[in-house]
Image 1 (cartoon, rainbow over the protein chains, first blue to last red):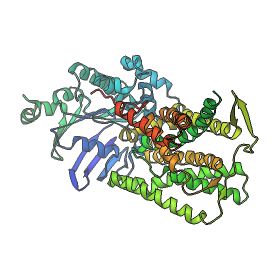
Image 2: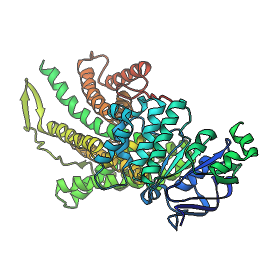
Image 3: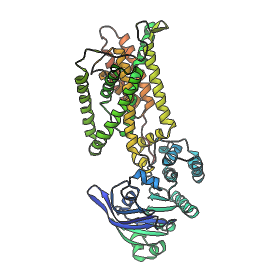
Image 4: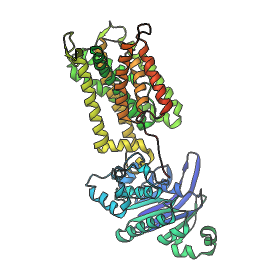
Length: 234
Length: 299
């Protein structure tokens, strides 16, 4: 059984339909990346999964339909989204951001906070600073750590590389790769930087104006000439 | 010097009332970004409700608590039934709705209770003419001390709620970024309704305590109080609860001093003008208020 499965999902904003019936799957323990140009519907796909917008069709998580469940409840089921642009609580401290990430949990969260401080030592140094005073890279680390505080089975990551220096981006992707390898965290990733994404992902979906136009393993996609031309710039 | 302390004591108590109402404005503003113009009228209406519970024979302390619960229900109910739906469609709509509530509650209170002879509002504290202490030669009425004390305790509890509880963290998260708050699983609807409810309950208490000092209740009870409270919220910064409290107390004291020391030819009515001039000057140089945060965001 797939962890996440979208079947013929339509979604958009008001009368504007952005996704015209897309289907995709994320297996347990997989990193899947959605590639596509601006306006292809990548972020909309993420928001359709996390419940931030109305969607039609079937969205199944661990076998049950979540297409009519609200965003707040979907977090409880085990899906956490790192929104595009990071969306940290800028007026709250780093540590408060992490605590609010664990809002849906009722067990002890101190060990988790320490754990993410170890993974991202720069957050530990800035634990009492307001998130708004952090650099873009640090905010992205915080956004990821905050999402992981809910102990999700599936992490939705919307363009984590946006506006970041290549080195920082690489560091973030290393962390995601490690969490995936060591703990089987499943990740659905949206990226514009295809070269980078293909290095961490196992499978790829190509999105074009609201439709899935190609899919395959990372190796297949990377070796497809026409796709290389269109998306990898080589 | 006696006169000075007299003005300070009186000012602190009225300032505490302004602060309670201002805090309500700030809590609502931080949560939803709206200025609730009906805040004062809600407080007035709940004050009449408190009076009514008392008139029905409920012990007064219980009546006050019931009044605060009514304020919570009224605030939360307004957010859920009116504000939430209107806000989705238009910001200006929220403004119109709160003005309509202002007028509606005022008329309703006048209709329900206006035909009775002037209502005596009981006090939570000893308020006989002889109930005061002399401090530095000035008269500090027990009632005024009580108002200040109760207001400070309530505000202290609110700050503990904000800073020490999970629900307080949720409230601050929603205020900071509603979208991200939903993404971490915070039920933003419950949080926003509670913000309005808390503001309503604080207003009810402020109105009840203030009503007791005026003796008789009228539908215009909270008019000027609301202006001072808005002034306090503006001065302190609309997103700063601590600022609202300090500014409320400062305006209370400042108003008493201005009225007390003003030359006779200017008259008592100067006080409101002084408050407004101070605010004007502050906003000119510090538009986010004295303690408000200037939004800084690095990208």
